[in-house]
Image (cartoon, rainbow, N blue to C red; front, side, top):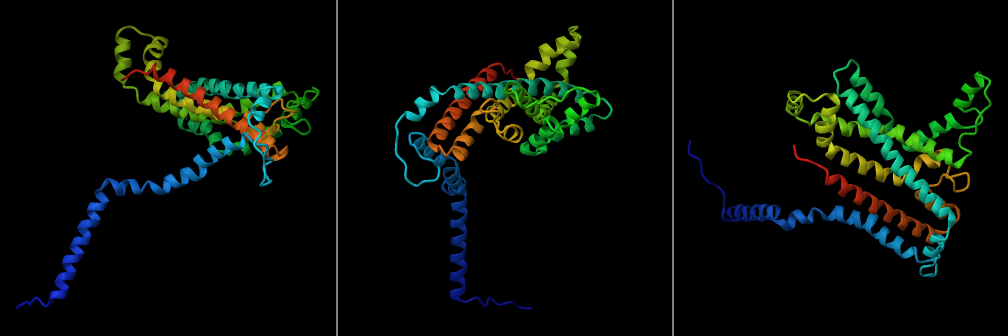
Length: 316
């Protein structure tokens, strides 16, 4: 059977044009311009929801805006002067450091202990991993309310247990100093599983030959941990510590659920104080100044911690 080419001159031109179009499209896809163009949606979102609000907050910190009125006046450094002469701010900064530094310390100590435990070949270790990590998947606000019902004065679970032994109930959250440490403990309880997972990944990444060489040199369990495990675990320590310290310094949900910063300002963090000033006291300009202070504190501490820990890392 003989086949004839029935394509006319117009069809040949269309095929030729389609081929040129495909070549042009492929060149465009492989060009740097096209790749950079794909970043544009993410860049728009970043500018809209992060960069613009940041600079807008910087501007508002020099104003007397109440958060609702469209009109406001620029007051210069008045909000910052007020902030550095406000005794409540000093107490709140102290609380913020307790939430950030102590939560980080407890989470990493217990997280490393749990990681070392579940890294052993013990029965039920998978169940133990799930049990320790489970609180981290719960909303921090819900976790705060759960623990509030443990510590509340009337009908709280802890006071009910004390009543069984004829012990007078304790108003656990009425004392600001005690409330700060209770909140720190709740935050540690919730996120210790995250630190455990980070350390467990780091432990499982250490080659076994290092331990074998240490055993040949007569190193015991503690010596192996000190001279092998800990130095090679520094990348995981860096990630966990920096992540925990940023989360602790901007702690918000648990505080709002358990004490709302009270009594007074005694258990506020900078983030909850900023919320209170903006939405309750309608002093958005002062709240913006507090927010800038919090941003500065978190940047300085996290960058300093990152550089210190990075300098101690060793290559495997």
